[in-house]
Image (cartoon, rainbow, N blue to C red):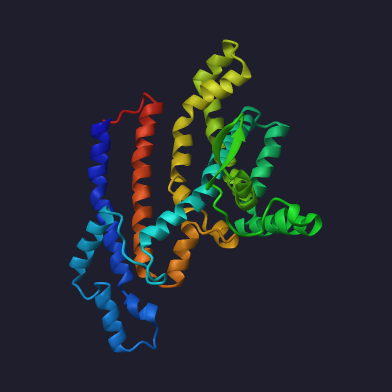
Length: 334
């Protein structure tokens, strides 16, 4: 297995280098310094700015320097936030994104797989039709509509009724993972501030789960319906296996390949976050930070974040292939 992982890593090195090269070329189609300083900047300001950030060097030198510094997670200093490095902004943006994406992924996966199993096992019946209708409705409504309605009915309206006692905030973010302490039987135990997470993250997580479940339920139902027609399911029924054992042991185990594929395709978004949620809820995660950097023409920030996101995608693809072999003996890493 380790030889397989090493081979895949080696195969993907040229791909990653090509992505970085393409990004750097595209960012230089139009001089980023002109875009950042604006049309009122004179030639002397532009030349000094380019020299200070090494943009006067040949492109191959800039490319090699970025790769070498990138190995050390040094992506330079932000243009927009003076005195702040891209690495500092990157590390600061990851926890807010994970605060939303990890709970949303876990809840969505568990609920969607369970609903998909129930729908497939009862296909053609009333329960199946109701679940399919709910999934289609979830897919048909825009993500933005869910956010606006969620903010109004989940936070704004209840706050007008119940006042500040309502636990869900309309917008904002708090560092809930900062540890506080509680005394239990005379022992001081550090714990995260769960109420801060509930206040700022619960509503975005619920909205994300509602939106994603429509798509995931339809996908998992299609997978499970296909599995229902397999010979091993017919044999298990003939042997008198219980419905729950057929669903959660036989069927689920043999459907793990498409399930892993579905989950692993969303894995990079655990770090990058959900752009719409972060923008509308004012959460300083990866998605919002990257969009802000693009708006502000913060070239080092765009370049550094893109390099990290590309690396996450490549690693998730390699991890997917490894998980295939672990859960399904029919798949061979060779």
